[in-house]
Image (cartoon, rainbow, N blue to C red; front, top):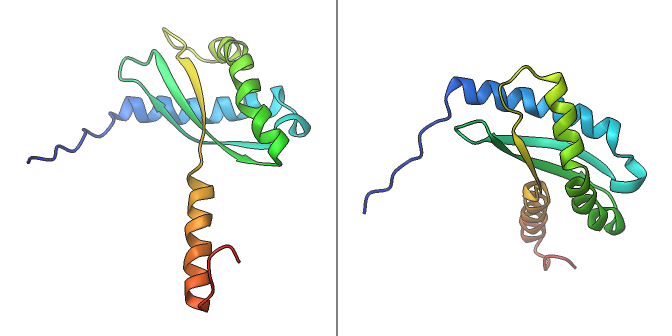
Length: 126
């Protein structure tokens, strides 16, 4: 079996992803209130090779009610954020934004808690 490593993103894709990360982060800060959706941070942006779409991975801190409201509000406001982004950037196309809640931090914290409980000799979650 040959395992192929996907090619590294080009320098241009990396620059566009970083630009989108900064701009989307600022737009989310202005457009969504902390009371509605908790604290959101843009952890990563992956841009398609043709620059026509981008997946925005969102970090989340908040209560359960805010967690359930966040994806819906992000989906509702995606077009507005995309339009605002288009007016701020000088690109041929403004990428279509797809927001995903990034659960990697939560998973990492869970693994750390399990490791810590194993070191102490207790059951995880007790």
